[in-house]
Image 1 (cartoon, rainbow, N blue to C red):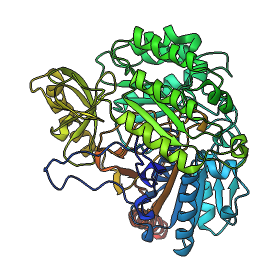
Image 2 (tube, one colour):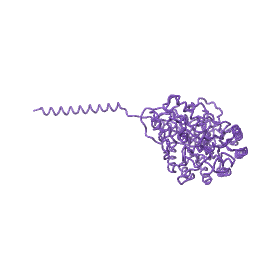
Image 3 (tube, rainbow, N blue to C red):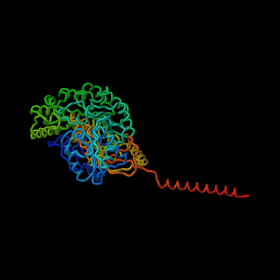
Length: 610
């Protein structure tokens, strides 16, 4: 199973001109190449977008299937069933889903479609005769898969309590935990379709989230991403708030800063009253000084039409306050070009806002009307004008050099993955600036000091400083890990790509990931909505293959992804050796029979003697 960003092309983190393009559908099944085949460096491409919300759901579904004895395969032809996890933010996602459904039917494979599309658009013709599972039913994915393999059509869409955070999980990156803190949204953006699927706000309790943090830290996770349609709205349904949650979580993070926290996307309205408290958390040594705050437009008139519930001035207050109170603060934002009714003057105000702040990350998208939303009924801006504005804003954004002046500086970086160029490792500074270094894999999952050698538009390049404490500790940790993995033999690897569900709110443009993530050459990218990324989320094809054995008990760490190669560790089913039992039984029976014969013979002899 992969995220939609693995199926949709990068389309430019900055939006590019055209909408995100589809790769060939088979790319939805093919995960990253196994390992670097060459050490020849190449210029890393601009980062792609990622969708944490969708990814989290997919990781949980993959974990449950793996714990039950299924394996995730990269080969669709050899799979027993396809599972597509979807998001409903924009049209490209739904189009990708339709394409994959057609391919699946042509291959005569059983199919399950999960996520926001079936939840929010249950009557779609494409979903007729197909098993579907809603966004709050992911804890029943094994049941749905089992029944579908039997030839039954299953439709689980009714809402219930939130799925447990302790379900088995297969992380796409074993060093990164995507932690959903709530589902749903309090907004009513006129272009948002996701709320139709995700519903009203539903928050996990602080205790349950803190317990989950303790668990994943003990499992070796090095980054925790808080995921949500709107992080700032957390707790308003259970009489608490985001600062209370953040303060409770940071207490549980290791004092050596080995595990970092990244706060997810937040819309301006819900953090205005907590700016100082949130700034204090962002200054914490274990919290990245980074926040994704979508503005969507620099015009109050357009924001009103979008029903965004804030003004440009309030957005400015959020950005100005955080940048003033948090050293090295980095802000990412989202822009929608060509919203219905947007005039040349409205667009000019947006361009001026971007020029003024020179955000290091701007996720630019063109307006997509979603059926059933108020914006779909509004008078549209001509498509050629929308494209023109998108290209112009992209050109403005790409003219900035946000990391100029970093050359020669020494920064502590947290290294969590291998870049897609197969050469660099990807690390992030305290401000979540992406740093690409050439270093041994033993540094994965560690932090180290790095000297910045050059800067690019999307990332900076650096050299790890040998002899730093972090580097020395990395070698010790690597040795310990190898010993531990050797001991836990019951874990069997199976190629996979597992990920998350649409935890994004079109409203927050969470469809554009909030993380300036992974390397310009990693498979992630900063664009998200509430922690979703700007590429509509379709997490296509969780292709699974059956493994012999019996179900294993579920547990939060039942299965983890194998780091760099994005492999899933599938718990193998170990049965008792029946032959051994039978032979033991026969031996016992034979022994007892001989004993009885001896006793009987002895009694007969004593009776017959005079």
